Image 1 (tube, helix red, strand yellow):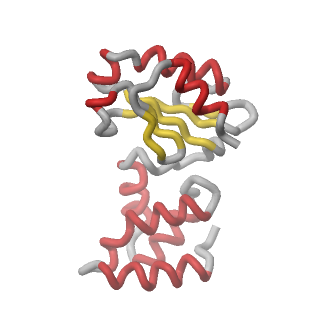
Image 2: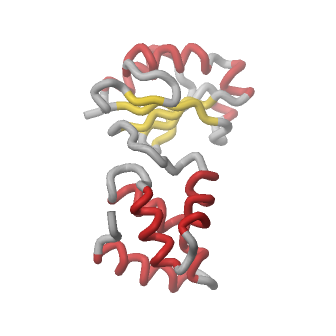
Image 3: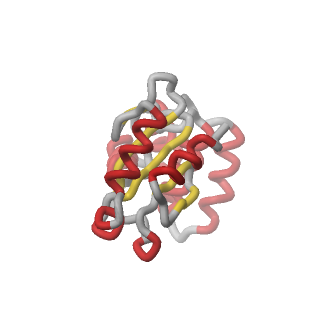
Length: 156
């Protein structure tokens, strides 16, 4: 999908905040993902490369390096369960089991109804309040399996 005129206008303003045009690529990819279906399609990567005067492989390299970018369609709600040492020691396996049970998705996949995408992630910086998960960008800490289930039940 080509970039919309609104996104191009937003990027025109965004690049003015950086010393080099290409430095605005990561925030621009975030906006593309938010506005163009929740993932970065090959067409979106090509359009971003054209806008930033880069080769598509350079944009793909950035998008594939960072775990916050998705290169395939994902569910409506993204649920990221931390599995780093603090969370692991305080029960992240039980949190993931509860999340998978509630959503019907397996780690690294979407639920059949495409409502949830569930993933394991490395440290999200909430170690003092482990275990934790991030749901649609919002941190939830000091979790129990029951609390994780309640959070998912509260999503529209």
